[in-house]
Length: 447
Image (cartoon, rainbow, N blue to C red):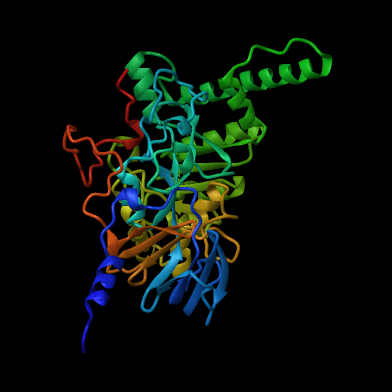
């Protein structure tokens, strides 16, 4: 068979490696048709030989035999598996700082102010099928700063382009050793003990309640309101249900303590992060309505985390807790689908239950499940395409789509996908796996 020079050039051009600057702008919304794939919707079963039509960045239609409108890119899904884009509810990538560790309470700071869209870790996360992340303040403080939910629209230099439009406000709390070590032992101020952490919460909420009451009274009477405090505004918004708490936690006794504190102040929703001893108090978590975002099998990397089980997430689910799996790692974020698969070995979860841990459940925990987390008509076209079933150890992500735009394509993966390249910069220190340090404590001891 003759192959013309034109055909060769056309083929070579279609598979040419790209660089970060070749990616479409962050505000682009794509149109495409994925044809004949195995579609894992997570919420509505698995459908073989199925098409997904995407228009203007949203899923317009799911079915068989769909036609591609003129000019719409067609992706041959034969032999491929399509799942919702992975949602990581606990990440510290794409940030230029993690902790504001000078105060035991730093509710006045916001992680959206330190979003760094140029970090190569964003592209690496895309290469693992991740499309949305929740960037949290660190755990140096009992009450940290407001967190930021990001869409991984890699290729932009504008931090705001990554911010997930309309995502609810969230804030980071921390229990246990971290705030005690940083402030109690490190600076000789409260909290120096676990009981000190509880009292710090009670005093902070009481002060915020007085602040909001004074504001409301001033508004009614036309009197002078209290002096503006960004910290008090944030804490009062928590009491008003405007901000969702995500709390670093390990021990069961402290988890119950914080739920008791929140009940006393009328706060009825919280997501516990890590939750290594969550299995001990799973019924209590379910009764409160709390969510839990856990490690699949990490523990014993410091004393307060010495006791846990790989069955943790399955026990939580079986007791009615809306649970997810997170990375808390710039490396582990690349294969959260492996972490989800462990729940089938330890807990015997179904495929949909396992995949829900990294899709619809974390989306619910972030208040964005109406937009992402499952493959449904009308939702954002955030999709991860694998060359096999994503729960198989042999499967690899081959394409990651955000808002209908292909942001990672294995066939076009360039040798250097950095956005910000400094020829005089030192070679990056890459550690693929290290749990001797707590990534939630980055910057905490640079005081």
